[in-house]
Length: 121
Length: 107
Image (spheres, rainbow over the protein chains, first blue to last red):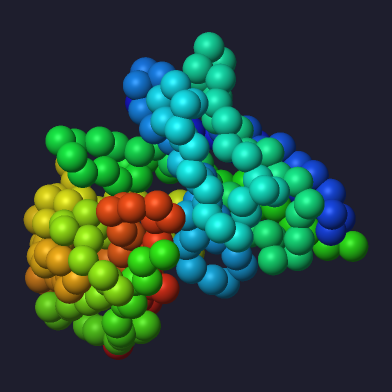
């Protein structure tokens, strides 16, 4: 059974840092792109970042470029999101998700339960 | 970035109704579009990929269509468990972008 379990969320002051983790199990983690998606309270979904199987390619949404970094450790079956210079508008539930690839198309086929990040003084 | 415009933002429907949600891309995205269902307090669930391919385990009352800039999610006969918010997501190029969501409520 595919499982994705996020951790590391919490309350942090503006300008602070936080590192989210996502523990993957039930599939060959090193064979899949992975993503982070967030959802601010009462708002819609926002894609945050993607990372290739070997970590050689990474993409981030403009609003977090230079502040957030996606990374992975295939030996530990883990995905990470390092979040620096946090702002109030980064307050959200952060989900990790697996990127399904079928032929030339993709999608986010499995999601974790999410971890809440609150940026407030 | 490609903008995804979903409509309507909300709708009220009864069990058994046929429901249609549309998503329009600001530029052509071939068929690189997926649909997701989210219930309150839960993670999104993957319904459809490549605009019209049903994800394994998803009931056949869900269907998708479209290509280029205009896409549609249809629920042929709304069931009680289908009341939720639906999002489209373009994965044609980075940054991937979601539509703003369509909340399907009970009439």
